[in-house]
Length: 275
Image (cartoon, rainbow, N blue to C red):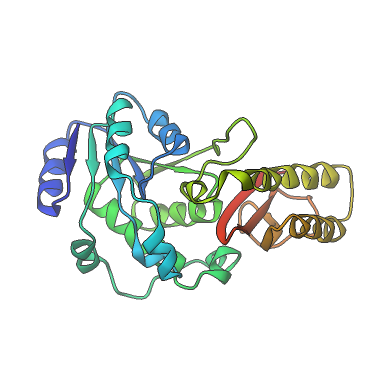
């Protein structure tokens, strides 16, 4: 497995391989967990597997969140090697910032909802770094998890708009035995508070069951938010939204999902479930 940080070296590497190999890209911000590993395993074993590790400062609306984001490069490289990754791209932050397009992003409307409404600049930052990675690494396939569903829709928009030959592969959310969605931020939550984390998916499942049984969405939402807050979970949003447009829904007459963002011990977590 090779590790490359230099832009010149990565461009040379890609030029030497793109003509006769299929390239699979797994973009990450490091602190690799089983969810990332599933993305790596989802890529074809016959393709050239590239994992990028870059903590993108531009997508953090909270400077302290960026500074405290877990960085575990040595462990990450070991996990990548164990899972047959061919190349890990670890670009230098100052170099990347000089390469990013500063023009106004043509962000689609759905990026103003949910996380976009509460994290100013977040999706602009995602847009700029993902577009940069696609341009530099020229993948044929790129793999993203459904846990960050709003981000996934933005990635598909970027690919459809600028990289029509690139296929985005979405991968189901990976959960532990208690149905907790793996997240890099989980490492920041004390073990004694994990019973609160387990309530997130439990709440989504209760809401899904009640909606399928014909219960009123607004009533369910109010009750579930109250229950979560009674368990010291601060709810940022808990929405029923279209899986295609992310517009808020009041019933389940079209493909939709329940989306949540909440805080436990001041750590922000997200999750979703399809109806």
